[in-house]
Amino acid sequence: MTKLNRRTLLKTGAAGLAASSVLGTPLIAQTRSLKIGSYGGYFEDSFKEFVYPSFTDATGIAVESVTQPNSTDWLVTMQQATAAGSVPADLSLYARDTLIKASRIGGLLKPLNLSAMPAAGNLDPYFVFEAPEGALGVGAMSWFTAMVINPGEVDVPASWADFWDSSIYEASLGLSRNYNSQFLDIVAATFFDGEETFKTDEGILALIEKAAEIKPNVALWWSAESQMEQSMKNGDVIGGQYYLDVANLMAADGFPIKPVFPKEGNPQDYGSWCLSSLSDKADEAAEFINFSSDPATQALMSRKIGTAPLLDQSKTDLTDEEFAFVSGTPSIRPAYEAYLDKETFIKESWDKMLAGA
Image 1 (cartoon, rainbow, N blue to C red):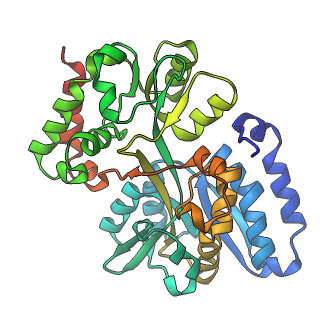
Image 2 (image 1 turned 30 degrees about the vertical axis):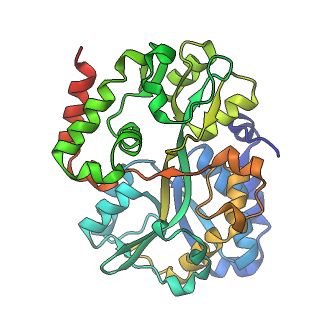
């Protein structure tokens, strides 16, 4: 397998390659087009180099790439644009929490015609977001936050619960500082009843109290990816939570880090393709979502972009090594609605726990 290297990819001039592919598009592509929003930088460059040209070759539909922020800021942009009657992008990527917000606001997204995208049937049904008016989102790709360890310092843990063992991990872990960084989901899956635990304030407080018990073992509550990266490289921490794809890149470069899928699994987040309510490109959008959902495209994105497929490995031609580089089982599904509905309570309780002795 060719290991993904973000830095090398960015230096190869993906935008220039994408431009040359557009110049070589058949004339028919000029009659049909689609504006697609995706997270900027490396991510957008990768889509422009590897995915959009393949789609255009297959369908004759030209793609105009639109840079969107990886945050709820895009939702605000789309609200303002919809009110003004404009369409910044026909298709956009929405994280599940943002998709839930959009569905609650109403009037921002157009229901998708699933019958026009049969390949979406390959996806786990969880990744098709259904609302009363119909399907508002179909999964595009996913990514994992993983347990990581320094394999030269400790044995591979069987469970996240092992991180609470101070005889092994005292003052040596790196965990995310953010209240919604999915560590509480890890606690819920490890010691409680998973997402159900978030449904009451008492359950949330129990999760945070259990999280507080790990504080003596935490050397770093990181808020930036680079902090955890450097601490693992320096040996300042010997375990914690980190992004699966980045950890695998570091391991491939020879650094002392190993991603692990313990028995509870790792948190899996994902983005969905969603159609603007004002777009007149429903047919083109359906063709792209169908193309994106195809096992071959899901495997292409895993190999070239480092995202996890939204279907079983057996439906793709990914090798075990390639699959393990971006994905694994089981997965922990975050309590998205609880983080929205009880945001203030969870954040204040979490911050109070971190600030306590």
